[in-house]
Image (cartoon, rainbow, N blue to C red):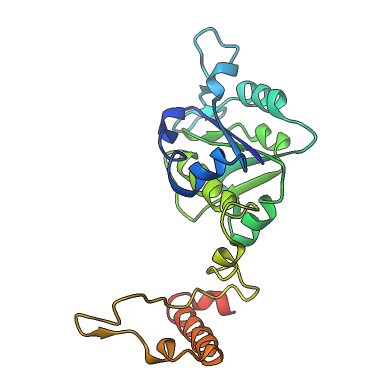
Length: 222
């Protein structure tokens, strides 16, 4: 897979993809990640990429020309273009799975007060990572890239993510996990996890996952 991230602040990505699982995925040729400053595509003599909104209002709006030209330059028949915006479709684990099957993603990071709405005509998907507003699309681009790369074949073992929260058909949260020591500051590991009865362990984990979901995210059970 190839992921091209269009941003005005490429230095924000320094180090993010140079550690842990994503670093290994890049080194093992499972993914190619390119951070591209789309300011280099502007035709404005002063490198301008934004302007005041028609009709007035606060802030500046990203112009069509630099982003249109960047997408035209990078896009192939295998590309899916994603625009990061608070008004986009909520990002879910199922979308991560679907996007992990693509060959080429172009992710556009917003900034300032927003985009010229005509930019939406050249994208395949508008995505939001939550009901809040950030200073730009860089942090969402990092989160989405991380969630996709870990799902690529050969990056991590399938059993490591198949039971993740939100990965199951019912979208319940993950069950509690424990490790050594068996007791710490009076807190004990549940006895059922120590008896070696995998049928009972599976049943306990399922019940605990449902209990946790009811307590923390009852909306997922509707």
